[in-house]
Length: 214
Image (cartoon, rainbow, N blue to C red; front, top):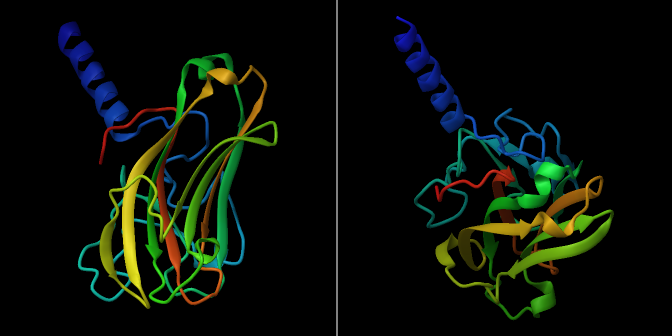
């Protein structure tokens, strides 16, 4: 009887670990609260941003949903209709001794509409991730609709230009931090600088818990 009870406890514990990954370091890193609890959402595109269970087709020619990368929810910043929108999602926390041997992970996806007419790179829609230590930037990632940094972008439809989609994991080694340091993660999405082409970002699984590819 005791043996059976211990087996049940282990099975329940294992099930909880699989279904509710910790996403340590930041609050609500998987957005499984169904909202932006713990996060700051700012910028002109904030009213267009939400936590959702799936992004249904957003543009002409898009045939598939973009589903949460983990769990039941993900964050979506902005839509794809342009209008000079900029949106930033951010959160800060305090580094503990346990964090120093960890990496920070951000599962991101971006839909960037590449203008069909000539735009300088500085006016292209783009997506950024920035890591800050005590208020100063110490690491970043950038991707714009023209350069498509890192490769692996796929055409996902058309809306005044080809829309390009990619999902990937950004990681950052926390060993350069010290106990008590403030760490902040900031993720920003920008429409094109001329206003006519949109950009949208999808975020999930943010924290020090490594997760498998979705």
